[in-house]
Length: 208
Ligand code: B12
Image 1 (cartoon, rainbow, N blue to C red):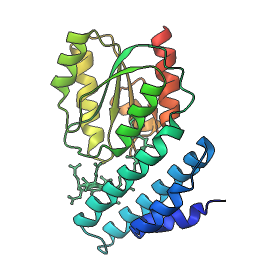
Image 2 (image 1 turned 90 degrees about the horizontal axis):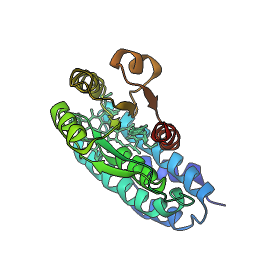
Image 3 (image 1 turned 180 degrees about the vertical axis):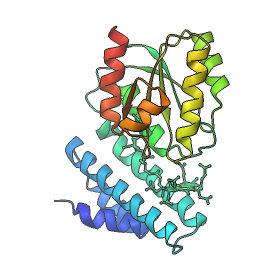
Image 4 (image 1 turned 90 degrees about the vertical axis):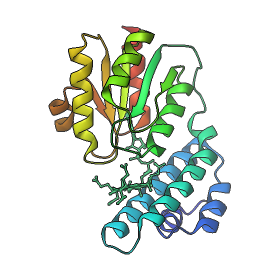
């Protein structure tokens, strides 16, 4: 039995050896989900220590690398069982002024496993680039990721630009600062924290 508390703690302490050792024991989707939760709990601890001035930007960078490696190990289990049938082409990106992409990359893997062709526009993506790509590619589904509180403003600008351009796109927003209230303010069609919900919502949209 994997000690997930220990994993969360090792993540928070940026103890690479222990994190790797514990992740090597993962052997099922259930364990991978629990391990992912533990890793995120560890990232929250990293964030807390950063806010308290105990960790610095260098630690955030290292935490990001550690988390990216963890996702690589867990990905095959997290994305198992996808039906792989092509559903639709969609856009995914991290919005303007936000450089965080680990959560977005997890969402991308899950969407691809769910059969979507994902046009990943990357990080710090301006609204106009999303509008231009959606128009050029005939996109009907856009997923926006953001981890900074500031990202909510960029999401709003992006949704406004999509609507102003007259594009018939459904927009789902996700990431730590997103909530039902933020979704209403931003004017998005849906919001989610979990990648699983994103796949469900986008699958329903693709079938419309
Ligand atoms: C690693 C990290 C970094 C790395 C990121 C590396 C990378 N490649 O992404 C680096 C070093 C670049 C970084 C930089 C900064 N960071 Co930083 N960072 C973090 C940290 C520790 C972990 C983030 C992470 O990867 N979490 C794990 C992933 C898996 O979780 P997630 O992103 O939330 O994604 C999940 C869900 O939200 C969801 N999801 C995500 N996207 C989407 C999209 C859709 C459509 C859906 C449905 C779901 C969804 O699914 C994912 C899986 O469950 C967080 C702390 C924390 N608590 O998260 C701080 C944190 C986000 N950072 C913070 C800050 C302040 C900064 C800096 C300003 C620091 C500085 N002074 O320079 C810069 C900002 C740079 C910028 N302009 O973006 C603050 C943000 C505060 C705020 N509320 O705005 C945090 C919360 C730390 C803190 N507590 O102070 N950071």
